[in-house]
Length: 144
Image (cartoon, rainbow, N blue to C red):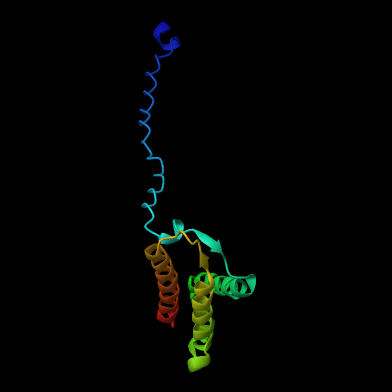
């Protein structure tokens, strides 16, 4: 009878589940360094830049390209973007495309380089400026 009064020993508590080792998380990689610039624009010496009357419309064009880029990310805006691009490229000789291309070319012609600047660097700089505008126009045309 005395054995009934003594409670039976409790079974040992289960061992806590092992805590998994933290999974190492790779730190985000820093962006790769930009390749060394081969751009002549970074090394040419400019004596005088064209007046703002030429730069202001080119800056407005840059803002338009930025807005086209933002709109291209939203499929709902594609119909409107196509209308704008069609309008931009329509008009033949009097198209907005030709206006901005011509203005860019004129701006490039009005840049006055330092007298000591090498002619080859000037040609490289002008060519890079021209090619940048042509590439922009090509990519905008490809969006249509």
